[in-house]
Image 1: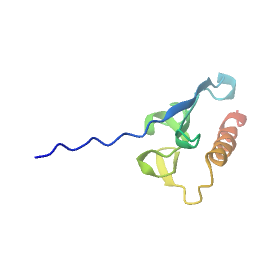
Image 2 (image 1 turned 30 degrees about the vertical axis):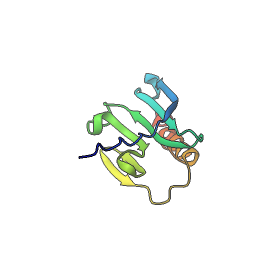
Image 3 (image 1 turned 180 degrees about the vertical axis):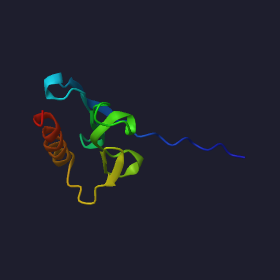
Length: 108
């Protein structure tokens, strides 16, 4: 029986890895942002999350977040997962995320 050639796995480079602690006077928690690009410079994988276990006990404390794991774009909101049917770009998702977390942080 002939040997099968292993298919090359796509190689992505992590281009963003940031985390920010939210001050207690603004509600506390952690903001984590990660993104990976392909060899052409396109963002192919991302994860944006505001984590605060005092506000949300589900989904590892993720209050709000966006990612494209499981091969589709979706939003996490207090334990619920909502598909994003109107995905435009990574940059637009970052804008949505920033607007969402401002509601929580500015509310304190």
